[in-house]
Length: 177
Image (tube, rainbow, N blue to C red; front, side):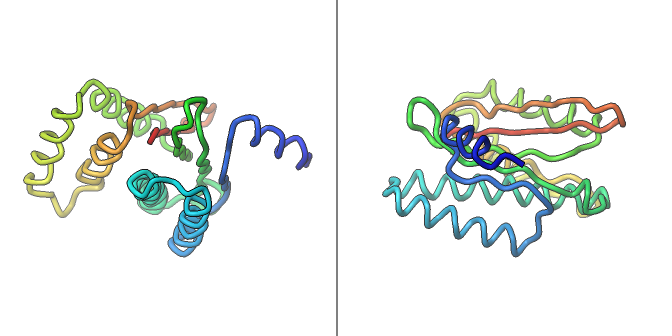
C-alpha cells in the first residue's frame, strides 16, 4: 500500500476525511464526531457544518440499514465515505456501497427525479412525504432522507451506479453543501 500516493491523491482532491470498511452504529458516531471537530477547526459556518453532518449521518445510516436488510456479510456490508471540498470551496459529502443492481437502478432513478425539482418543489415534496402514512411492512425508507439531503445540497444530488460482474453494483451518492 502506497500511503504517500494516497495522501497526495487526497490532497489533490481536497479530501478532509475518508473511511472505507465495515460500518457500525458506533463507528458512524465516532466518524461523525471527528467530522464535527474538523469542521469546527476549519471554522465552517454553523449552517454548513450542520448540513454536512446531517448529510453524512443520513448517507451512512442508509448504507448500514440497506446492508442489514440485505443481510450482507462483513465483506459486502462496507461503506466508502469521503468528505472534501470542491474547486469552489463548497463541502462535498460522498458515500458508496455495494447494492443489488436492480436496487441501485431504482435508487438512481429516484435521485434523478429529485434532481429535477427546484427548492420550492423539494420543500413541497418533503412536506407531502412527511404526511404520507408509512407502511410498517415496507422494506424501504419513506424517502424523506433523500429529499432532506437534496434540500440541504446547493447542487442536485449526484448518483453513480457502476455495475459489477456478479449482479451487484457499486452505488455512490454525492451531496454538495
